[in-house]
Length: 305
Figure 1 (cartoon, rainbow, N blue to C red):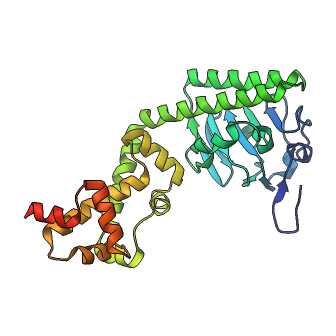
Figure 2 (figure 1 turned 60 degrees about the vertical axis):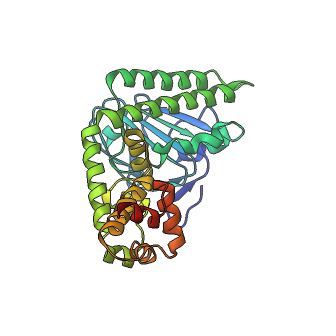
Figure 3 (figure 1 turned 120 degrees about the vertical axis):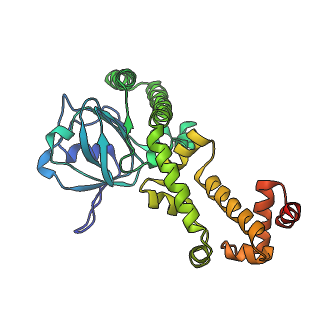
């Protein structure tokens, strides 16, 4: 643990964090599971800011309301899950009701020599932010609860030659189920997400106004996500699930539609169109247009005329 007068407390080990919060020391140096029915953190330190260099999973079993978790507030509806990557800033809440359910911490060193270390970045929900918690059905809660209990049971067995193998496989199973449930959430909340897609397309149409795109350049996935007030990874995962295309691909689709409009309705040269759409080099525009339509801009214009 490291700190100075102004910076948040930085915790490099799970054991240091547990001691700071007056919680039981972890049964394994690289992983800790808190069952808030049995233990509670020292809330006299409420408001303290911590930077954790390890992963954190939070499972609220029945709590309904907003919880400050990481950089913002998560809206849990009758329970759910939230995920934090290492090196995220968290603030200790002083509300006792927010410390219920389970919290799982595991250090990157736990998975370092396993395939999970290379694939964990595929679980995009570690990068999700405000209002993007995983809402669980009653059936899904039972599945997640059983996985947390299995991890607790393995930790209680003590450390042996197989402990790490078992724990890593249990964590991977937990992440795979979370992935499945997030995909279900994208589908069951399709009406909400359809509105989000409509807002994205409206924004892109406005951004491809020739004056705006010349001044600001081509829109980026980060810019679009910020406009929609969602995390970049959540937006891309949601779009991929519902449309089969990422944010970047949607940006390109809208760009090509605008390019077709200009090729059809204006007398601008293809180079002028490229510059008006924010490209520094016409060759880049020509390459993208041909990649998406299988025709060069010049051939597309000739065919229409």
